Length: 475
Image (cartoon, rainbow, N blue to C red):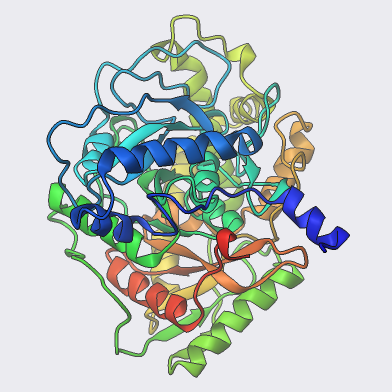
């Protein structure tokens, strides 16, 4: 007999794990099963599509479905035959790219984006595109006139943003891995909200998009969200085989923890003075205690950034919204900036009043790398929260909330991740051992110097081995 509490939990959770060709395998395990011919590529794609259909009526994570592929020659690559999705701000030939916006009618992409080609080189089978908030500006995947993307751990809560659609599908077991990208936390935030691994690589680690290269500071980098550390590690190694930046040290395939013990800086409250809430503090301090038990040295640190950092980052974000408003017709001839959502409009209007400050904003943001490097002196990595408080309910960060209230809520939530985007350093979110009272995941973040992905992955492997990450299908 189930109790009312158990029935409530069943109603608020949504997952697609079942006894089919995917089983409970991660992407590496599924690719191995395909190579050993335990399951077929077509069978895996069919069962993944069925999982997506079964769960997406509750999650609203998919923007575009792609018909099942007609497989001719066997796919090749580390993830050969593994089903996945591409985030809907990245071109996939033949599919529209909507950027989460109702301000224009998207047209079919004429060719793959450079990162799409790099992602496809791993052998994945793309089943469609995932939803994101308008232009990726929000840390939740919600909309003014459409259903939100819901968190599979508790469907009354946010799945995070901006890669919320990808994170929801992976956490729910619909696919084992999915594309994500990060311009202010958009890989790490939904990973934290949905109990996943989310690695934001070093700037330049994967192929850059053309738009980012034209900006004074390229904030955005592509990657994936996954349920296991080995999947994120295998993706990075496979992506590197397609293209490697000669200016960065190679990562190669990271397969487990290192024997080397590290000196870790512990940052519980954000550099701009936002205090983490009680559950988040507990999650981070417990993680620090685990790392000390494993032989690492952990010491509290302060990371000093320019007092203007938060306002400067917000102004830069406003500049991006302003530029999208000016150049929107390149996305669609019918682009109407008045149809953008409240967050995009608020950011744009804020920037119009501050545009003369742009040179100083860019100059100060670029100097952040000096303060960041000073904070790392004598340290190997930095341990911190991903977010300043636990995952909010649907509606808390909806773009229909008045801008002044909404931006205050966003800044009280997204207080740790943007520094790594400005500096260009790598950073990984992994699930903490503790959760909220109602079972929602809490993410902790490990950040490093430029090019330190191997070190971050090794530490993530060690945390996963010490306390295996929870999975929805196990509960």
